[in-house]
Length: 246
Ligand code: BJW
Image 1 (tube, rainbow, N blue to C red):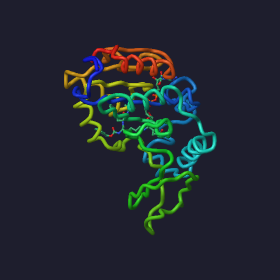
Image 2: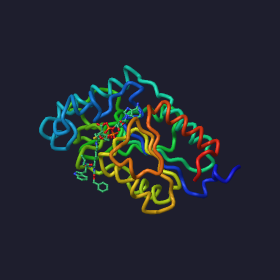
Image 3: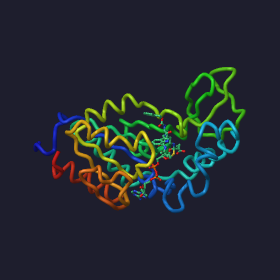
């Protein structure tokens, strides 16, 4: 094995993904032209206050998106499958941290995966916090199957709520040798701050793979711009062939 190919001794590869990686599978991004936030406002559907004020509206927003996943069955694209291949073939650890609530990474075969903003095909009890697999519509009165008192809400992270598994994510960011950001505008924290966290360690390479320069583009050592279905497989090919200096 060549030095450049690495053995994992440099620390894990951490890949952060956002809505852009699922765009070519037919799922909308948030902030692009024609994206989700042009059709509904954050204040209407993506805060705890919105859920308190109008749970039916918020449930409807997520019911529609859940049905899109379970009934239209969008397929993982070449970006997702390239990352799954990287995890299979790279000799060290590869951790994918996704902001996406769709299930396209797992359906592409990605196993070391964190859904930091939750999962659309799960629901969570507002009382006992039990998390259950959930493919049906939710209504404000849908009861928790684990306790007598609670009702279910989408298992997602709204603005003002703490994303999941932050301790594990920051531990991996501090140890990582390569950080790759794919298909995210870099406008939502804490994910937008991950590249700075990695740079603080001073030894990891940072790469952005995105349709266009993101908000934090200047913070990356290397940027490749284009659709995820093209730039991600090409970058993974280069990495596995030892053509990327680490
Ligand atoms: C392609 C492509 C193709 C297109 N190929 N690329 C002031 C300053 C700093 C922070 C704050 C602040 N005020 C409030 C905050 C915190 C707040 C925040 O960041 N607000 C900002 C608006 C400033 N954050 C929070 O509240 C978070 N919690 C938190 O901070 O807790 C405290 C904490 C403290 C310390 C440590 C840890 C925690 C929670 C954020 C929750 C976000 N929730 C959402 C909705 C729920 C999930 C859902 O419904 O799906 O998550 S918002 C939405 O944005 C969704 C996404 O995951 C998230 C990120 O969006 P993403 O993925 O980047 O999509 P886009 O559309 O923005 O970008 C797509 C990109 O793809 C573009 O660049 C395109 O060019 C590209 N692209 N096609 C490749 N084919």
